[in-house]
Length: 121
Image 1 (tube, rainbow, N blue to C red):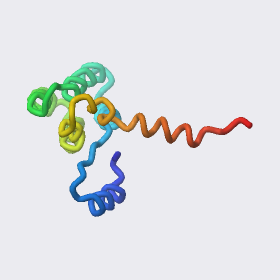
Image 2 (image 1 turned 90 degrees about the horizontal axis):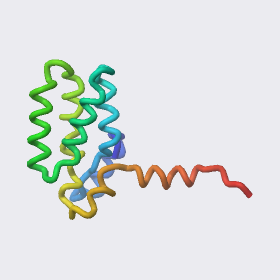
Image 3 (image 1 turned 180 degrees about the horizontal axis):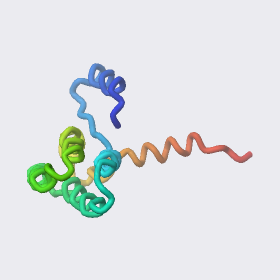
């Protein structure tokens, strides 16, 4: 789910025991949109460390370091990440071999793109 409040609300009502995984690519883009150009590469690298950590504990440690380092300089970016961090980590509740397909909505978006692709007859 990518920030569609109505859809998330209905989803939570219909599937109360299901977790919501927010797309890490979209959250990364949202965070980077709040970062000055000169810091984008550094922040992107740190976000990768957060999102690709080997455990929830490690992820939260990396986030705390990120927050301590950047909260004063880019508070809106830190707040954006903090707001969505938990929903970006739902994939950690699943077996590690499934993580790569759960982190982003890229597979779904690719499939949808095929549906909307003009057909040559």
